[in-house]
Image (tube, rainbow, N blue to C red; front, side, top):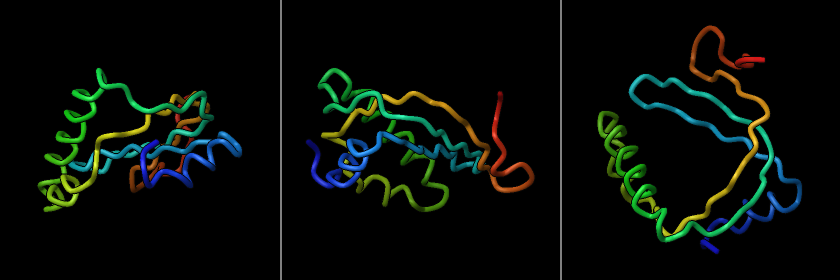
Length: 104
């Protein structure tokens, strides 16, 4: 398995609970997804191009904050794939409504 993920993977095995934050850097639109892990595995080689494209796109979006070089320094391969069942979604964009549950 990928080095550096030891504690995270141990936590998933312990209770299976997951919270994922998704943020768009250009306007800080942010959501938090909460749920449970359904499975954990090493990412497959056929997934690598999509993973690298996503990593590059995130680095380019960070360029305006002059953080792209930091993002590009993050290892993106090999990586772990975690399948989750989303149970709740929360708005986390700064401002009114932050922290409120989205949808029913």
